[in-house]
Image 1 (cartoon, rainbow, N blue to C red):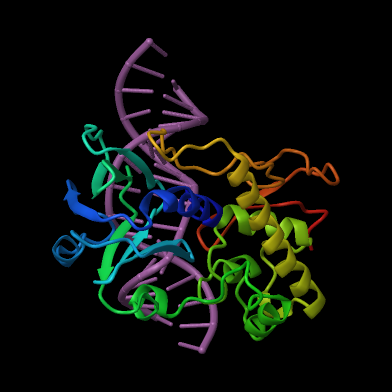
Image 2 (cartoon, rainbow, N blue to C red):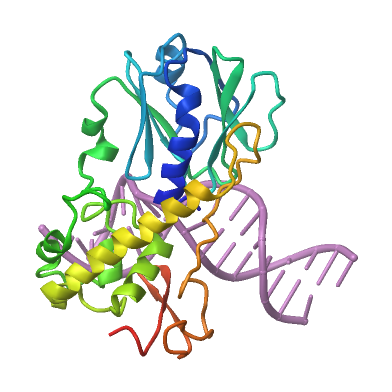
Length: 271
DNA sequence: ACTGGCTCCTGAGGGC
DNA sequence: TGCCCTCAGGAGCCAG
């Protein structure tokens, strides 16, 4: 399940192979992703030069003079560069054929991913329009979290996973951040002090930055590699560790559900 | 405005 | 060993 660090690492890994390249053709074998891949993409993208590749939330934005391709990896999507002639395997739904002799190949067994096309500024696109700040940028901090949580009765874990509040905090990192900040995941967001909001914002930044760091050092080849998605083998303190000892105090980690998501916390360390 | 629940899809993993 | 069943997950969307 690509989380923000995986998307960031993917972006950095494939960018050198795409920037300045011309897209010669688009091969679509399966149009039925989360939304159907629009025909406008096959019409507009071929012949275009890749002017920029960047990440916004968990979306990858591939900019050309004609428009921007918006790509999301969903929970099982991955990208890699292969020789243009290499035969696709199962779930390899589409290729962007480059003028380098390689193609960018998208695989997504569960098809929760998406590839869309917009001719306008991508920030105006329906999917990107209402997104909150990037967690690693200065505009996201304890003050912002405090302000956005006032009056909210929802669980703090659900709040930090709300992309209108802050983008890119998936289930794993929400769990880990709350553990680090010593906050109980079910606590009502509006009842968390300013100081604890500061701790939480700092924890979110630290956890994500460490994961990106780990991704950068993980031996991971986007060229002819296996392109396997998944989290970096970062040491996880609570996620997936139900009944196991808390690394800080030894108490048994508890599992619950918050907003239909698996939630893990230490009953001693998190209040 | 907020909140909670549903939905898409398939591989993995548990139980027998 | 093998089969069947359940479930997880990102996040948009809808209903109350």
